[in-house]
Image (cartoon, rainbow, N blue to C red):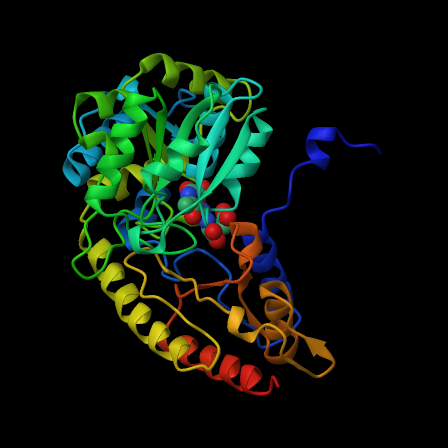
Length: 398
Ligand code: PMP
Ligand code: GLU
């Protein structure tokens, strides 16, 4: 059957693709080490699981308002205030089926055909596709590594056109794990104010920050910044809840939230009622679990970066947040083994999966063809075993 031009022009998600391939191999009994999946390996904390079971037992199993149950929208407001100092009212909040869905609805509600969205590169794979699906034009702009992969203000200025509508900021970032400095965020926010841009701040990794890095929410940088920022967050990474599919956003502009809610009315309706109860427990319950997981990620980060930098031809900066290492592998280009030539990160990722059954995501989908993304949301023994395999495979390259 002929599919639409829109569908033909939409790329598959490489992050989900690699994860599915690694899981399929594991199901066939292959001993795969999966560094592909961008999801915590921890189980969802027990009190959150218990809240979901209680929701089922108590019959909280019907439709809720599309934009989320009132109690959950209220809890999202409390969490924005407690965790990030941001003041939103429930009607300024929308709960969707994961942050991905919230961002999708946001693009649908915000963009007219031809509207441009500036996307600092490397970027999370779904941003450009979601912009395109809304009829918009993604404008990738190289970030500066020393500035947490945020672009310079001069870079942004040069990319501005009369059609520029929004800029996406994602700190800590996927795939780099980089954390933007307060100074750079302030500069970009001032520019957005000056040129009347909407700031889409994807803060899904904001609770996963290491060393003395700090998270800066653009919406907290004054009234004008607040007025034009949409702050996106969710339960997936902070509370190890990827499968539950709960994300949310806060925005000063209630008309934008209503527009997003209409998108949701006509597509998914509410996110699953049971997941909403779980999210309520996550947001309002004890938060020690978040810190425990953060500490574990930090230890894993230190180990994996050390091991990666010990492999000849790989250079890996220390990420300040999230759970990704994003090494530069361009030093391996031109080498080969076992009838394979490494001509970029794609062929390196394919070689690692075939030769030593290690799954990593090649950087092209993130706009960085010389890098691979390694998710270290897995245990230290698995990290050590995976890196040993990678070292073996890479040392065979000549
Ligand atoms: N933003 C970024 C940067 C991400 O890495 C992810 C990963 N899943 C999401 C948004 C969406 O997360 P979810 O839909 O699971 O809330
Ligand atoms: N965001 C995660 C990742 O980048 C999960 C997969 C996805 O939604 O892209 O791997």
